[in-house]
Length: 259
Ligand SMILES: Nc1ncnc2c1ncn2[C@@H]1O[C@H](COP(=O)(O)OP(=O)(O)OP(=O)(O)O)[C@@H](O)[C@H]1O
Ligand SMILES: [Mg+2]
Image (cartoon, rainbow, N blue to C red; front, side, top):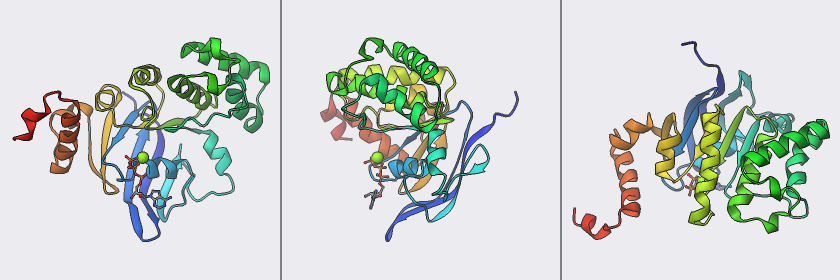
């Protein structure tokens, strides 16, 4: 098999907020079509890592490259770089006064100056794929949280990014809406999208990941296949982290408290 192209390369990334060191020399490579899932305790630096990749945070050391070009430290061209990196957050920040279609068209038309007819067709195809073509002319307030999140994904995809970053995109959703968003992401993974996903949905992480990164206190503690990570974590820190999720999901919690 031929070696796949490296899309994203992070070397020795260091990020601090004042005296708080959040990322302590983190290195990571993501290949084309790869789905990397980042898990780890609250406050370990997952969102900060994604924000650094997307140029939303200044960094104190190291280097981030996209397809071989260094993108970190480029405040001037960052808006161009950001078009190549799609990001979906926990809160779908759609413009309330614009229709769903216009929300999606905004980036491709304004930032990428593409043809309206061509982009509209693509936006409609993508909306159809996520089951929301009938919401084309609706306003964000008329959509459910899950629907808005699917629109946010379409909006990012319509920019043709090299890599998609997802930061806990289902965390603010009611349980019945989580599935529909995760299904869209599973579809993207199957089609070969390059993705970095931060999630607390462990079953989903296991199903979608090519590779799991376990981050703790700003460092990569484990990096393995989902199978290995979930059945046989190497470190005590990862074991402890996964135990918490077992407590969350196992119904008979009292049975476990004694051991
Ligand atoms: N703008 C900021 N200013 C100061 N400290 C910050 C800022 N953003 C994040 N931090 C701190 O950096 C650390 C990492 O935060 P981050 O949001 O990356 O964690 P996380 O892994 O995404 O956590 P969670 O799972 O709760 O979302 C935390 O200690 C947080 O308080
Ligand atoms: Mg976070």
